[in-house]
Length: 100
Image (cartoon, rainbow, N blue to C red; front, side, top):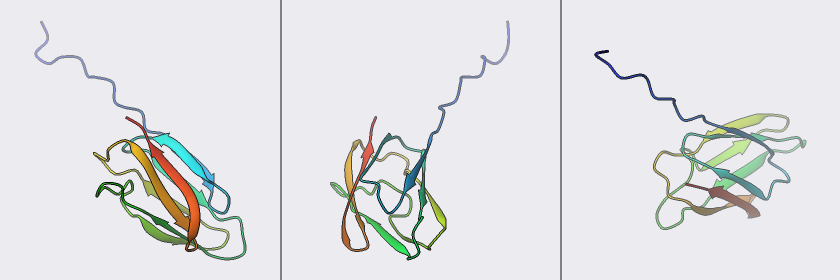
């Protein structure tokens, strides 16, 4: 009999690629997933994600994406499921949907 059990399969993480200028809904995502925000415009885009019930969904929740660049964010560990709103350049932008 083997001294150690067989390894358990790991949880596959997903990457969501979005257009930062137009996206209104992302997900459902889960902890550890990544979101690639691409700015296809000629101006910087500021993203600010709001907390829900005291929880922020990302490891960094306020960032600027330079024109023509991509910013990668990671869904925080242990973030509860829910819809987390984000603003784009100070105006309503959309939501990040965290599933279970």
